[in-house]
Length: 232
Image (cartoon, rainbow, N blue to C red; front, side, top):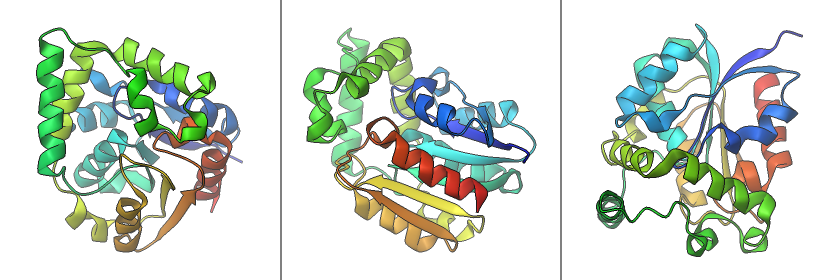
């Protein structure tokens, strides 16, 4: 069976390591392209850089911020996307409060107060049962260190400038998978339900006892959902 070209888009302060489990689990059916998004400060630049790296047509999976990039890629080159997976993400814009918080993070980072993923943030990112599990938390801390303060600022600027992708959802007709952790506090299940409702050919998978970091927290469940999506 030929392997499917699969583009994996990491989230905020994530490197390709966020997908380590999926790359291992799906190596028999997928060839992977995983761009380093933190080098770019707009969604347009992230999308164009990904399209330049990607095969002519591909399956596309975006996690968290990567979902925003996936929408931008589909907006620019829908003919290249054979199927789409959107994990722990949202189609709508930030609330005013969230946007203000992002701008605050940017200002703090610019004056030298970048601490990566501070341990006090972990309860917002992962399920309480995994907050002390170093198999989940250490990759988060290490990836944030690799991306660094400058990369963090560029990513936050790109997120702040992103388009509202809710009008785009009805134009997505390829096989779609929407995944969300039941206890995701960053992009709650209601956001995933909104996406799945408006995409005609979407399957919604809610992962129990899971926060925002589904690829790390519940790797087997995420990989199984991706395998079914790739082979259906």
